[in-house]
Image 1 (tube, rainbow, N blue to C red):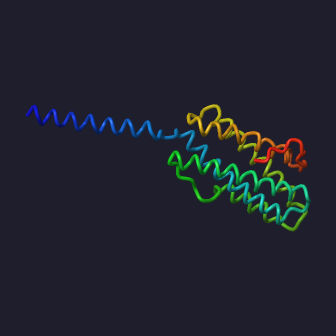
Image 2: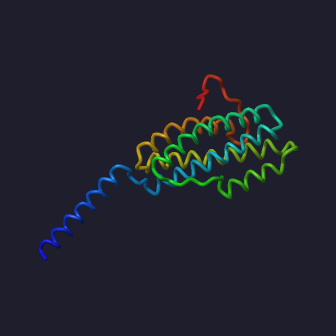
Image 3: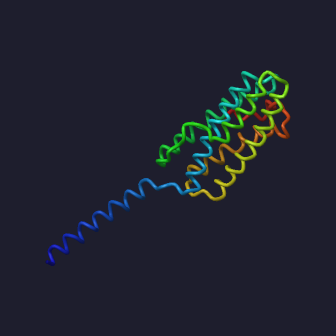
Length: 181
């Protein structure tokens, strides 16, 4: 009997040690961190789609250039998000959220009219304000150092985008403040 108890204790200790070692090797992201990754990914997908749409349907050069900037910058930002999600075993959705898709469809309904640019700019102003709030939330409350660093890296890019569409008006990107990513 004592031998059986000893064997059970040794087995339990071995399993506990393995579990603890495994947990320290690949820490699970917190709910805040997972939410940030999912929202960032969906936001990037939405901004890439909106940028491509602005390139096709924008009626002014400023909106078309902003769209090109969105595609370039959000593609780069999303590569970082996907890498972090992979490292933390966070599953990412394959599409923007239903609300983001609905917003883009509402803007697309104005394609071919002068109302398109105004609708696109207003939607982008709102989207980038929400994105900045999510970034600030991650910086303040996140627990994964890599994700907090990614949020800090993304913040000036998203702030620059917001400056380009602030108030629903297209403001050309000054060449001297171009962040490139």
